[in-house]
Length: 340
Length: 261
Image (cartoon, rainbow over the protein chains, first blue to last red):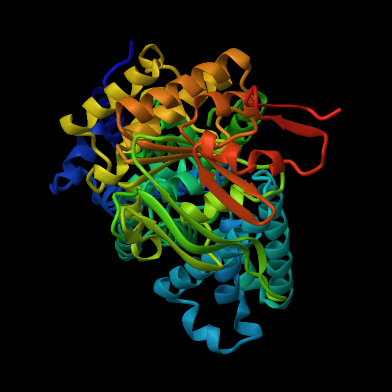
């Protein structure tokens, strides 16, 4: 009737490996396959620049794609279960906008708050500001959702927070210098490249913390599928579990947004892809499935970004939106009681 | 507490705490529910049945007095300890998900599984026997959202059974069911109470069936709770005052309610 989840997971893992390698091979500069391999294995390629491109540009970019895809997708999975809404996700609920707000304060707030000028260069302060911004918006969404019985209302609330934060960002950019504005605009288009190994280190650190917390929530997430009252009756400490899930989502969405910019729709669409593949509600399978599918989707998007065969590189947000927006409309049209 | 009561209450007052003062729905509630009994909770709309059940299950705090589960004060039990003593079937709508019937019933094992919820052999057999005794084994691989409301109600009961608790509380389990399915449901509850020696408490508006099938009754009326068997309650006139308005009257002879004109 169905394949074993383990088989599908292994196939997905293989696909991640293939795409990871493909992502490194492809790019505006054509590099022969064997030179890519030699650079990756620590030998030098035929040209010095090729080695440099592979090791310091394409490899971190591919790793960033996996981290970002994984983290955003898992945070989407957590939000969809916690908010009992299949259309929830870090972008839709305004959590990414919250991160933008945090980043905007750091990059452009120097005009208003001179203190920020010292922080603007530091990746850590950017990440922390972004996580604070995302958790602030998430906390507001939680507060509002506790008062509204209609789970769809939180989508509208998320939309409102989104426009509210972009208005503040607009104000900040009014006061910012042209240079700051350019930096922020470039950041907000979403960008996996230009990631130094240091940034990768910090991003992995936060992503792993977020994923570990998410993994620790797997059992309570299953219970939340029956609603909070049933979850409580099954022995779940609802308050602590919910807090853990929320902190995990904030860290994942916040840190990734800090480094890669607001990447739309991945967090919303990938959990559904995992559900379609595994046809289950159990989070211990969906969690792994979402991790792998998230990596696959963002690697694919990153490959498409480079417009294979040309020298143009598109912002990743454009690609994810072009793919993601139709997916959401598709989901809305076939919305039933199921989660897909 | 001395007895082998699975659920008991002492000097319990139920209601809502508000800043302007407590709203008391019923007070001086004392009761002891024994295993192996099917007990129905009857009362008019607004008499506080849901509040009572919410207080007895610890979802809502009592205004005064205490509730004891298996002799232990419910306020002192951890969520996990409670989960091994008391299982629930609620009227809450299930959020959207892709749970299959088997997965849903398996969630009843959560109090016993490891940190990630893996099912061991000692978990699968209670799940399978729960599905069997409720008669839904053939639905195991279906998605829960494909089921009729009668089937879903059985699945939720199987989930509660898989939780393997001495006490099972159901909030209006027969709502949305037609006559046939209500009859099946009550027969099932009766069987579970007697065969598995469980204490099953349920609230209902289904007076006729409740009167025919229940071993004991909790009647909630006029801010008081009365507990007893049918003969005792007929004797002391409790059924006569269950619905005070006069549009319903209780016929002692036939042991049922009639329209009051």
